[in-house]
Image 1 (cartoon, helix red, strand yellow):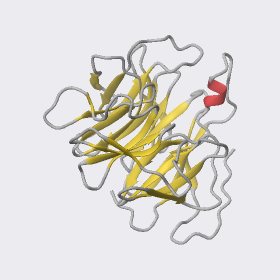
Image 2: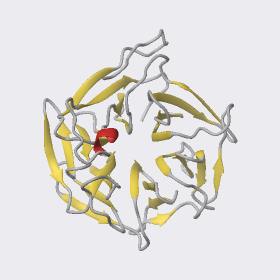
Image 3: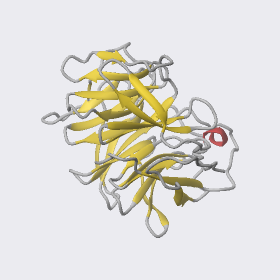
Image 4: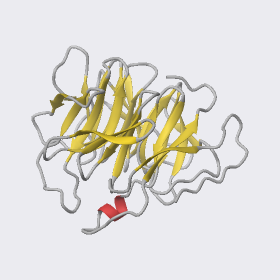
Amino acid sequence: MIALAIAAVAALAQPKVVAVIPPQHRLVEGVASNGATIWASSVLDRQIIACAATCRTLATLPEGLHPLGIAWDWTRKLLWIAADCPDLPGVPKCSKGALVAIDATGKLRAAIAPKNDFHPGDVSVAQRGIFVSDSHNGLVYGLLPGRRELRAINRPGDGRSAQGTALAPDGVSVIVADYSRGIGRIDLKTTSTTWLPGSDGKLSGVDGLVRCGETFVGVYNGSAPGRILSIHVGQNSIEAVDLAKGVSLRDPTQISFDGKRLLVVANAGWEAAAKPNGSRSAGAPIVAIPLPAGCSR
């Protein structure tokens, strides 16, 4: 199920499975943690699963809202959820999803959407705001201090399939992983996007993204098996390498950082979920990867 053959890599120990979402939750997309509880999003049944000693259903989202990417808000003590109606068998179509917030007890605290069509897929949280990406049109929206509405922080047409985002260390730009365009830097003041090539050209195929100190960590699932990449973002380019050589994951999607470890959804279940009668015989593992040197929240 998970290939975890590891070469000798300085400062990295063996990754391990720290939770398994039961197989009745056929599609597991997002993961988040506050260091004590691990949350995962069960897409098809609209549930947020909470795992500590065991896993249980914490909340079920309103009809029509299916949870995808999730992120824990350390400042506001909320779990933010990118919720939509993905194009999957049994999921009714909709014109708009929402950015949803629940508290640690599962109580719904907010559901926000812009006026235009909105199909969010991933979300990230920083003290300076919440950022949510639309994979349908490449827009990234921000819920920024002093505002009660979501506004696009980049320009229409700049991106094509926005995925993971993370506020850069400078606090004035957001790094976005666009599945088609590659890795870009969005200027929060001007809304312009600078696409950052690597040594081999654009780095397309990155899904989940998180900042870990001065470095970014991305989930590459553009081809099988998936890999976890350490991405150094320079002024005009990026440098991406395997975080741990020899570590490969089946169908990885999202990633989170809870201050002491990186958590990755492995074997999410997208292939089976795309089939009308698809099922899974084993649960979705949440894999913990020890932090590389220099990683801090």
